[in-house]
Length: 544
Image 1 (cartoon, rainbow, N blue to C red):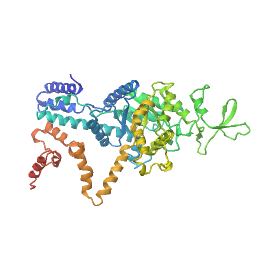
Image 2 (image 1 turned 180 degrees about the horizontal axis):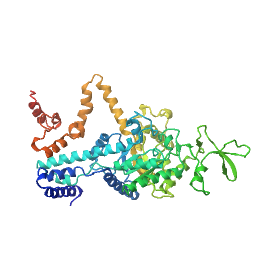
Image 3 (image 1 turned 135 degrees about the vertical axis):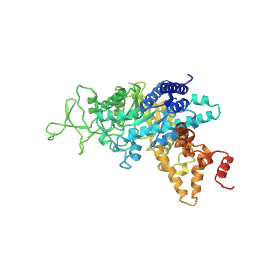
Image 4 (image 1 turned 45 degrees about the vertical axis):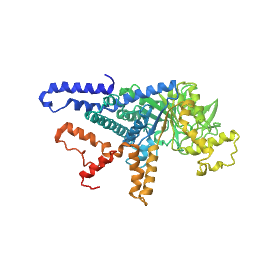
């Protein structure tokens, strides 16, 4: 067969024909061509089918990046299946392929937008079941996008158009999801159970962070508490076992370290031999040298270089790490994770600075040469200010006269058309390409873009709709833009599956089917020619 789509169709066609022969007259009303068409439009029967398919894609992309860092991958975070669906439809429309375009599932957005408790901060307070539920929802919407597009192609084929090549070479909307399991939502058994649910829903890549589960904080907030390496390794193992149990041999684990911004630990691990992981972790804990006489009742003491030391312990029982130890802890975290089954790294950073990221990654690569990062191009960063500061420093170093700029007010709109702004924006534009080449970043994602676009779009629409523009605000700012730009959901009935359902009803009931399509369907008004609208108006008795 030429390709998978045609192979699926022919295989399904033959299967149904064989079944018809077996069941005889009782299957007379079953049309093998219709059944084969429906099977082709639903290529992925289960979430595990999706996980296997997308894991292979990620492994291939990772291997390509190892040989050529210009072949990095990207994703946007989506908080609803419809948002993910429209993203991938737009990707196919604008870029002609989904190659190296993924989806990201953000625990932050699940907490803020999907919890039955209402909006929550990113502190693992939301229901753990909300995460696999969202993965399933996303893939349900993507599978529907496949079915709708293929259904349109089959309709055109039925009408005599030569679109067989488009059907045979159809590219699915199904792409990899990197899914956030936070800190694992409990102990390693809890992590394993949740990972299984996520994989069964379709996740091929699971991201887990080294914070304490019940004290988890957003990576861009203060108060982060990390766990010893042994605890984190147990959770890496739990995820790997979940992948293996479900037959996803290529499943990907993304190990995130929050140590750059974390200054606390809840637990002091037990060292078995000098220099082991526990010993290295303990060496980062801040402690004061004391004598046995200085020790208080129930003090916790360490022996360091033959002397007694008392770890600095806060009133809440947490222990402090040494100031300035954060980068060394990040590097050790990354190396340890890669040496214990992780496939990709995630380093939370305070700013999007390529030199700072590269400094850490290069230290990791000295031990694990193929170390690769998933990097959060976070909306928590003020990108404009960060890069104007970087551009300011570069211009100053080049001897530029910077007296026209107030270093303490670089966000001022008066600088928007300045040389400083131009330089900063060019650096932002090339950030992903430069970071992929210089800092080992295989995958660039934005965690919360659709959270912000939803808020911005509602701000813009409500400003004018509830003002003097009224309905013109919607027509000019939304609907006319959808028509001009060919946005698929301008025909929202079709996007929700109305045309697809009409065809299915015809398969099931023949000419007796009650269909939603027809002359009186107002969606016909969105055909491009005025003659179509005239026909609709005429059928409704409207005189021009």
